[in-house]
Structure formats: C-alpha cells, structure tokens
Length: 147
Image (cartoon, rainbow, N blue to C red; front, side):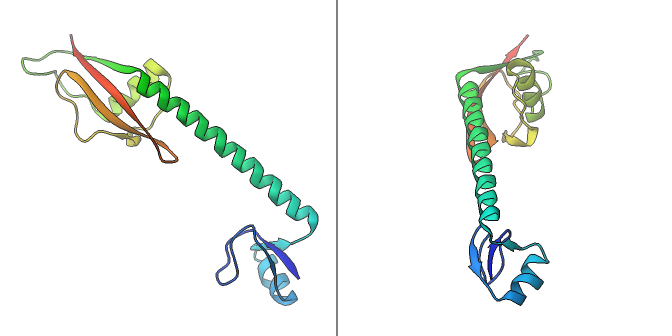
C-alpha cells in the first residue's frame, strides 16, 4: 500500500513523502490516526497544490517584511519628550517606540520585537534593532528631541 505522509512519522519518514507500507500498518495506524492518506493521484496533486499555495504565501509575507525593513531603515522616528535639567523627563521604552511606529509610519510591531538594551533617557539619535520575522532584522534610528 502506498501512502502520502501528512505528518512526520518516526522511523518511517517526513511529511510529504510517499512510502510503501504494509496494508494493516497503513490502514489501521497511519490513515486512522491521521498521519497519512492513501496515495492516489488526486491526493498527491492536492498536497502539491497546497504546498505551492503555502510557499507563495510565505514569499509574499517575506516581500512585505523586506518592504517594512526598507521603510524603517530609510526613515527616522522622531519622539518628543519634555526636557529635564539632565536629559529628558522619563524615558523612551520599546513600548513607546512601538506606539510611535504605528502612529508615524503605520507599521505595527510588537514591543517584544523591538530590541532595546535599556530605556533611552537622553536626547539624540539611537539605533534600535527590530525583529520583523523570518530572520529579517531592521535598524531603526530613533531621534529623541527635548521640548
């Protein structure tokens, strides 16, 4: 019996592989437990079509993230804070940077994806690393201005 593995099966193979197995093992274990489907031409074509759609969606997402990276690295985020005798009042945290990114550039990034070693407490330009996903990182220039 030929089966198309839907999930990884230890000692048999990985998802997407077509394997030749004994009838009882294929029917009673693999197919019943949802690890595999009978490898008919229709099922194999459906599987390949689904994988092609997933690959296209992944490529589109990566292209969108690359676009965000270019936009973040080309622009500078300006944050205004009240002046203090030394530096600024309060501090600029990754949560504030995430809010300002959404307001100024229209890009939503979670505060946990903004890699800020410590809060910014002085005026000036600081470079901040941002994780966008799929191994793509951007370096954003944050300009803190005292008013």
